[in-house]
Image 1 (tube, rainbow, N blue to C red):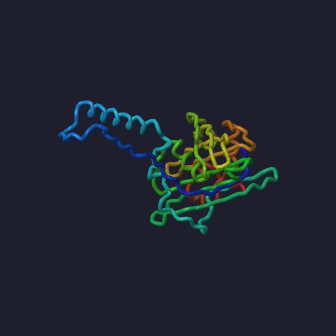
Image 2 (cartoon, helix red, strand yellow; image 1 turned 180 degrees about the vertical axis):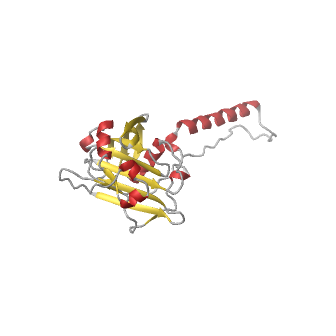
Image 3 (tube, rainbow, N blue to C red; image 1 turned 135 degrees about the vertical axis):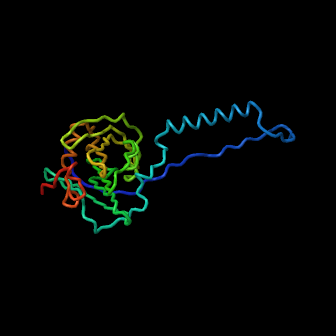
Length: 244
């Protein structure tokens, strides 16, 4: 797999919606009646049914589940990096690494980023979530939406996720379109399985708008490796050891 960089990140943004609508009766005021008429009951039932369907068909507005929220996690520059990215061909893209920890239980969120979401060069962002107990698994779309927010972008289109067997375990991925302040770009979103207490996912975008297929994405992921701190957390089962 092929790329050129590492990560940074931010907390997810909450979705919101809605404007209240008022009704006005133009007819002369009449005495209030107790209860609702049959037409009103049908209208309320239709409204309730519409809201249920809306909630099921609008995943982009679904709130981020507590299991993938980074509330309570504190950035700590003293924490050792848990993963690295190997740059090749003499390229030296901008690399950023941010580690956050929740003090009570030591649960961590690490983000490694290379490149800029608003640029035209290759971009890679990898998010690593580690804990002492098994982690909940949100849908791939929910995870990618959170990561896109870290880049001040949004996922405006995503294909149905596909799964591929790799040397690093099962790779779940989908092609997506990111929309940011400077426009849209074609990317791929992915997630690697392999450990109940580790969740690793990411976004990858080719340079100059190049599309990424499963093979190209795999070459990018192959450049990731675990550091000694990552190996102690069990990341070696997914990424292998740092060769440097």
